[in-house]
Structure formats: structure tokens, C-alpha cells
Image (cartoon, rainbow, N blue to C red; front, side, top):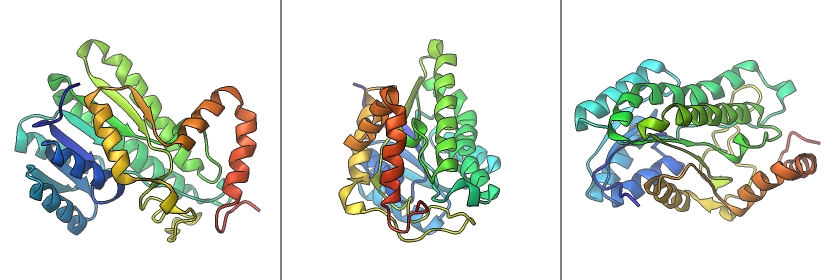
Length: 271
């Protein structure tokens, strides 16, 4: 197992949740960090925490839905450290609404952040990653294996991300590029609080009991270990693994199970 010590690691969506936890875990293990997020003050706080752990870290305010922001992010990483070893495409947003009631702009926004953000960052980082025989990581979801009701845009963006990364892996077999898709399952983070409703506004309070979910810190530990082991995929949480398994063999049964499960959420769009 290779170590991430002294490796240059870019993490998008690093100001909170899984991104922040991954940054701190990588800092603890001695990585050199380039952290990206839209919220400058929150990002600076994470950078400071990483530096307090002894890591070299810089923050770059970045909206991954904008190609130019992604180009600048990768450029600053290369300028600061002279190399890029690991790109963790973590930035993402979710949604919760029936498709028939959802404004198309909501679907487009999810694709812009979750899919295009991954494409933009990977495109500009790829020459450096090929040179270092490094790693491209996409933080996806079980929604990238099984479309989730009330999350059409989110599921579509994660399916697209996984298809993109799968193809990228095959294209670069001879370049020794490591490509990994990580699917955390339901995780205690702020992604549900910031999830978009049908009109594009944030839903606010999470409809799920966050205390019963895997913590962002636990996800981060699994993620870093999987990168060091250069795994192809990881699916986390028992619920996530069961979902992927059932989808392979009894997908129609899983459809009904998911519908009934989501219908039990607080203020569910399913009646």
C-alpha cells in the first residue's frame, strides 16, 4: 500500500462534510493539500486546521460548475507544488423533489456541479496525474448505481460521473492512472440541508436522522485508505452495499422498497 505522505492532493468541496473530513485526514497523514470550495471563510478555516496538523495547505475559492475556476484551481496547485498526485472530485449538491414538479434549471445545476465539475477538474489535472501515475477519485453515491426516487437530477449526475470515470480508467490503462469511484451511501453531512427543492431553493432541515448515519470522518478514513490501496470502487455503509447488491438481482423488488423507504421521510414528496 502506497502512502499519501508528501503527495499533492486536490480536494473539491473541501469546506464542509466529507470534503473537510478528507482534508483533515489527509493532513494528518502528511499530504500537501490544495483545497477548493465556494465559501472562502469556511475554506480558510479548514486550511488553518490542516496547517495546525502540520500539513502544507492552500485554499482556492472555486465554483466547480465554472470551467475557468477549475482551470485556475489546477494551475495554482501546479504552480504551488510543481506536481499533482491525487484529485478528489468531491464537490456536489443534491435535490429532493418529484421530477414532474421540478424546474429544469434544478437538474441543470446538479449536472453542472456534480458531473461537469468532475469533468472540468479532471481535464485540466490529467496531464499532471498521468505524469505522476496518480489518482482520480469521484465521490459518487449509491444513486450512481440505482436511481433514487425524488432524486432524479442527483441520480443522473452520479450515473454520468461514474460512466465518465469508468471510460477514463480504460483509456488510461497503459498510463498507470488510478481511477476510483467512491460511493459513501447515506452519510451525516450537510448535503441534505443544502439539497435543492423543486424550485431550486434549499430544503433546509434534513428529512433523515443524521445521527444514525456513518460520519463524514469515518467516510474520510475509508476513502484515504482506498486511495492508498488504489482500489477501483468502494461502497460504504451496510445500506449502501445492500442497495447495490439487490439492484443486481431483484431490481423490481428494490424499486418498491426504495419507494416505501423514501415515502417515510419527513415531509416526503410521495403520498
